[in-house]
Length: 603
Image (cartoon, rainbow, N blue to C red; front, top):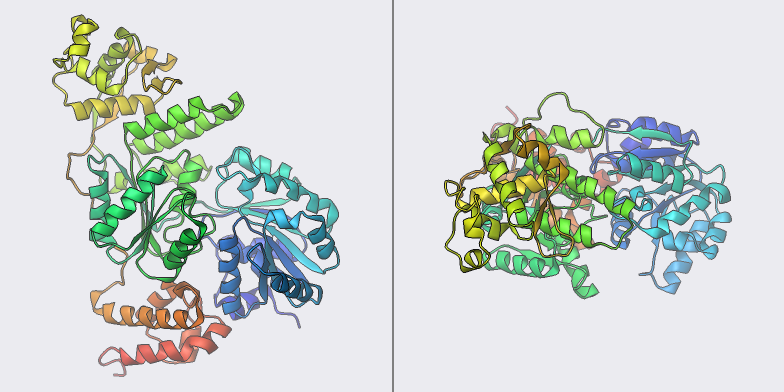
């Protein structure tokens, strides 16, 4: 009798039950249906095609955008006893031939490949001679030119609908607003596919966004206070900033490695391998790093520059805490970052329709930064997933920001922009408002304007905050020539006329720290056992040449600490311990548990 999806889930992957909509997706695909699956990062999308591929006859074909992701998932599946392989450009001719022959003989459960390889006539002919269980198109948002990771190769995957009629197809992604979802359906010929839209909430992630006079110092405090031995990712906008930040962290005793497209391929590969296989490594990267990184124990993701959209922010922060344990999404942003993104957008040669969509996405990102209410509610609302009550696990919930009536200051700032001819940047405008003794101001006659010295009562940092929030709210725009001069928009008129008031966020005083919690075992008395379990995992991983998390996730080790299983039967009851891993590693971890048995455990 063929095993049921629940049997497969338990015996192969070691889970006691499905989560959320996983079971509904699996049942639909096992029955031969097509599906569009939207689930948050870490929400278990992979099981939605891995389980059906094992339950149905034939080989499941997985289209994946990155070679690193293919190798990662194939190795993880093999650890669970699944017959998995990949076809990509890193393989030699003999390896390719051996894999293709195994496919034709029906000896593979899952085969991973990139879209570029799949759509070649040779590969399509090979698949035409194979019994196929399904097609899974991962990172499906790449098909949309309005998405944040557009890959033109994905647009050819709609051909599968005609060439392999009757083979179920799944499109899976963690980030897609409504226009992107429409593109996925149209581009992949999935107009009739059933949609499974899971909740986008990642309650284990604490969102923290702020203004920091010394962003590097604030990040260092976060790492030292809350994540001293944890793996993390730090995102920067430019390659130069990546290199400088990695060096700066290294000089302070942290294991930080740079990653960007300008580095040699071998350096990128080596740094990625260290990040995946070693504990406590921090990657400082541009957005070139991340998609397809399946490391579950990333405890923090930090942004030192503003992402271009909420989709990009959500996907990048979603790389933290994939194991469900507490994690931090931290971001520092400022006026210069806002201006830079606006300048890049307006100077773009893209067609106006595309620029309009990008403006909307950037406005939403800025709104998330400046909002004074629950950040999680705003984030989820963007994806059409409302949260009824404030989350209690973001900075605005934990420490509600102070606000002030900034109407008068906003009027003064916008008046300064207008009266100086809408030709100057923030620093010059602040000098005018504060009445600075500046030769340039005198030469231009701006010391005779009514606004000159009108804002002496506000510090320069406060004025910078006012301008930043005016830009974020769309009352002020940046010129398209790249000189940084500010202009008033039509939205400024009601405020200038006194028809609307503005409540502005009051930036925290320099040096003030946010409260936080470091992800660690529940009791420090458990630390020796926790460290011993991780050490044994590290040894076993090194013996096999795989990342430690492929042996067991941190979440599984945490269960061992909390439940202290004494035999294989008790160990098998933990989520994430399947039959293959139980047989292969059970005795090793039971030995560690026995050596650290709590006093009086048998009483």
